[in-house]
Length: 64
Image 1: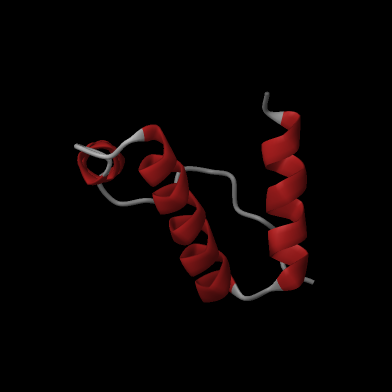
Image 2: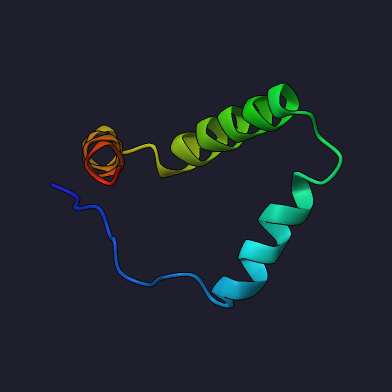
């Protein structure tokens, strides 16, 4: 069974955050929401492990 890694795991997290914000520049709310949905699906496909994805959904739901 795979486990969701919720610890710091991104090299250059501040740089990635800046890139993520920049990717939303000039988008409407609807376009930004669609971008986020596409990004989530791309990353979920890359992860591929349904157990990890289920854990991620549960973790995101808890973090209101």
